[in-house]
Amino acid sequence: MNTQTAESFVTPDGRTIGGTVMEMKNITLRFGGVVAIKDISFDIREGEIRAIIGPNGAGKSSMLNVISGFYVPQEGEVWFRGKRRPQMKPYQVAQQGIARTFQNIALFDGMSVLDNIMTGRLTKMKSNVFQQALWFGQAEREENHHREQVEKVIDFLEIQNIRKTPVGRLPYGLKKRVELARALAAEPKLLLLDEPMAGMNVEEKEDMSRFILDVNDEFGTTIALIEHDMGVVMDLSDRVVVMDYGKKIGDGTPDEVRANQAVIDAYLGVSHD
Image (cartoon, rainbow, N blue to C red; front, side):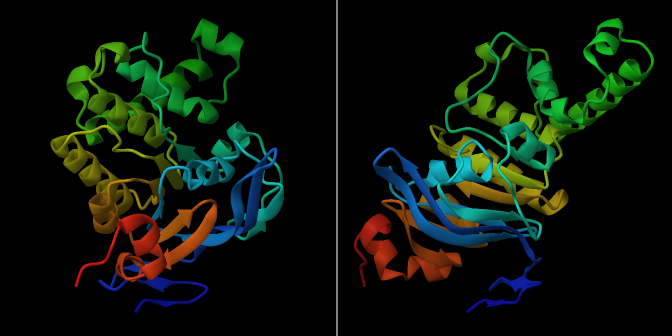
């Protein structure tokens, strides 16, 4: 059994996770008469990989959209770093240090890999449009700095050989890696991944799993992810929250979730002795 306090969380394998970064308190989200999320509470802790799982239609992506500011819940509160978060635009949430990838790839097909990743630096740019157009002084120095940071991400994700390739020419698995690169370029403190391995083959999933673990370990980035591959979820995650029909039916370590009968019935299938 895991032990946890307000300041720390110790996983069964002995890894120490920090205090609460984000807390979802009694979140309810409706679309007209349809309840997508019903009275769900859970937290995300510093340095952990936190998975959100559940069958199709469970409300997982809606919850990720609440965290990232795309949706505003009708009830409940979002707390970030000990403060109640007011209603914000998505770009304001990004400025707080929260970046994300999307279930459906959201890249600019006609732009190169490098230019797509550079868009991840937009929230950190200080020079105005006029200065950028002249590319002089502060704008030039800023551009060079952002380019250096992007090149580090490109090296980290091992995509140097496609850096000048238009994204539209890339296979699906590499597009997903480029989208991860764009999110990392923002230097997020909290990284949200919406089905980062959907549609990938086994080799591509292994590569993406390795990169996710490396991001968490080497950068210390807190990660919340949605993923349907249960093997991936159980291997990567420190804790798992399980949703079904908009409700929370489980929350705990992978082993605790695996043994939860409600989760077995709703998501994992029939238990076999």
